[in-house]
Image (cartoon, protein in one colour):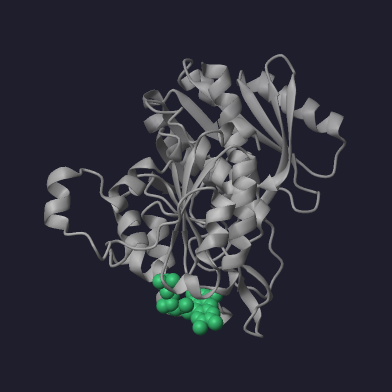
Length: 412
Ligand SMILES: Cc1cc2nc3c(=O)[nH]c(=O)nc-3n(C[C@H](O)[C@H](O)[C@H](O)COP(=O)(O)O)c2cc1C
């Protein structure tokens, strides 16, 4: 992660009462090494785990613990001072990090409860809030905790989910604080969301098409839509006006992104045609079937005899997009299976040429932890001059952001 991303950024860190508190001391040191300023708010319960002085030393700043000072008369105070701690902490934050986050603070944020310095400051901030839960596995799996997490995600709160492992309480399961490197990476990603796609209208397609054989059986592919939805989400967080065309069974976005679902290749193409004129950037990551069923049956086909399917080639949607709107910046995807780096980038470049595209992102879905239905990917972004950028194996959100970095650079 580029240190410039962190330089002089104010990160307000809310520490809550969990066993993982002590790990945050190292996290703060790393953030400061990268150039960030750390401002810590400790809940009363967190002080049972780590001494306030340790956080003062790690952050190099005063540590805040209370909303009210016992000796201040606030009616008099406010007449002379416009500085109220929870508002000034909320205002200086470039990013609010809650780490470790207890089930309690998650519940409070999700329900708008503001009854101490930390929860009140979070209520008052417009900075992105990144929550890193850590708790016992049963607490994490608790239906209300999960509902709260879901609600917060839908409201654009960010999470680094806890990991599986041995827990301090003696249990084994999901609940350990995520590894610090991953948290730092996520902090960096959020800081980078500088609204650099503000004012841009982006159409993203994601997920698999579905061709019906009969009312219950389909031909589809293994695409989960994670890569495309990840791109839509990162573009949305960077200020773009995003419209997502999402495969019927592909994963949902965590954010409030405008979307429509598609089923068949024909349906997807129809929806693209209806919308494409309104967009300046089109990122076509949907995995489109190369064939449709010719003899689709309206009744469920009996299973006791041999069946021959007649397949007919579908429209090469990607190659039609520039013809539908020649002003778009067009980005496509090329999936190959177990090929050399050379073959992969060559085949991406050939696709780019045939579609008159601006970029093609190539990945090898035959390799471990890449491509369909996994959270990670490794890609090559090929441009019109056949230059390519290699983005190493990483979470699809990170890959998405790096692809957007290339787009931002090219459309400047
Ligand atoms: C020894 C001990 C360890 C705890 N560890 C956790 C934890 O890891 N995660 C959690 O959500 N709660 C944990 N709790 C419970 C919280 O401390 C409790 O819910 C508290 O109200 C949280 O307050 P806060 O969110 O204001 O810091 C622990 C409690 C004790 C006594």
